[in-house]
Image 1: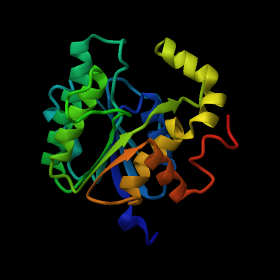
Image 2: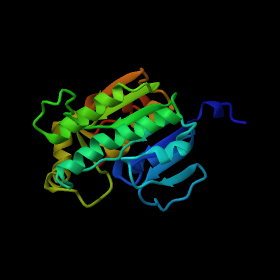
Image 3: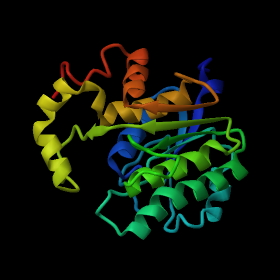
Image 4: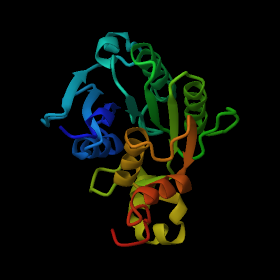
Amino acid sequence: MNAQMPKSKRLVIVGASGMVGGYALRYSLENPAVASVLAIGRRQLGISHPKLTEVLHQDFNDCYPLAESLAGQDAAIFCLGAYTGAVSDTQLRTVTVDYPIEFARVLHLSSPGSAFSFLSGSGADPTGRSRMAFARYKGEAESALLKTEFSHVYIFRPAYIYPVEPRKEPNLSYRILRTIYPVFRTLFPNQVVRADDLARAMVDVVAAGTGATPSQVFENRDIRALIRSVDPLRGDPTKGRK
């Protein structure tokens, strides 16, 4: 019997079909510190693994049907979100604010000792004064999550997330940033983070306790430092990888 098994974590990943959530899933399945992964989403992921259990759920405005599945979990990595401009303002607020708050409510009811790792964004404004809807909504969600009674709450505020693998970019800004990424990462290293590195950091902080304090907000610079604390060869977007 592996002596580390009692310390292995049972993780929930919401949004595993997305870019960051997908990397979080793959990393968790390979990670010996993770005993099991419960992936919750609207569609099948199309993969099979001994650690993986999938639960399909369509309405994140009501997560109470998930209560039984969420019992006995150690932590959640919440990556579900929407791009500005891809949905209406009403839907953007629903996905950005209402969904994580409702999911966190039910998770805490089912697993009150669990931790919560939340994908926010650079510029998130808990004061609600930002002119950018995305910043206001992310800030509103952050404030609500930090007031919960989870054992730990970790807020991740990445700047530009480099997709790593080719994809159809969601809008013109992302297409431009991907094109100029080699220059941008050199000139502004604290404004970029690789999607796979960000996902690893979100998992590591709850699975291995890296950077562990009861509540913490990680800006892009902090995320890179957290990545390097685990592996000095990771976390520097200016070196070694395209």
